[in-house]
Image (cartoon, rainbow, N blue to C red; front, side, top):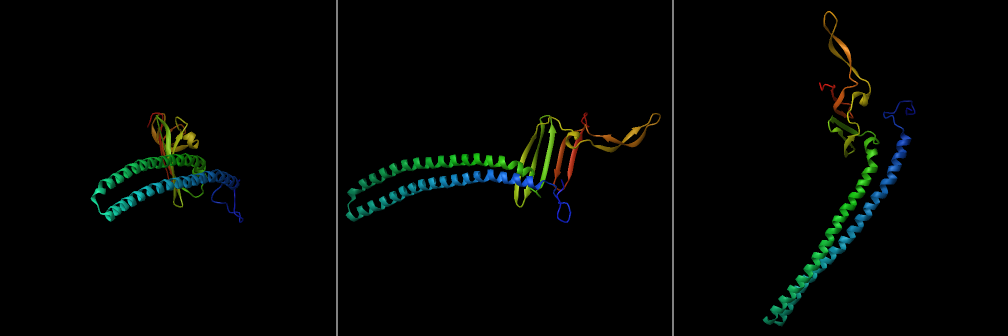
Length: 235
């Protein structure tokens, strides 16, 4: 089915817009709850860290004011006999609060570490939902593909960008070997060859490349193509 403007001019992208819209709505319905869960988690972790930080700041403030008050009290009384007592009070306070601060800082570190792992799990789910959409569902995106074939199999990359957003995917294919026929169907190109029974002459003859192996392929949205083929003799 071809989609056209009201003046019967074909649209530049021949896609089933209704099905694409349904897919977009489905993706949105799945992604938004995941994003909301990340926002909720971030608010929760931010509140927990804020409470811990306030407790640590309260300890620091208490220790600072205690030092000021005890020294002021000693100055008001005006005797050196209180020096050792004040030092003992401040040392005990510092040691006690130091242990408590260390416990709270460890707890804070656990929250930050656990939060990062929780965010990553949700982000992976978001990417799993968005992957089909990013690969083939965005109109007008500039894309570049690279593909290579070797003894380890077929792999490649896809890079896309649109309106300042960029995405990158590594691709792996289930095919062990990729031939021209599997990639684009039958393909023949003209080439020079020597023919003749009594006298060999060079003539242009169509050569079937369908069974050639694709060793490398580069393609972009500007329809620039770079294709490297190998025959069974690796020539």
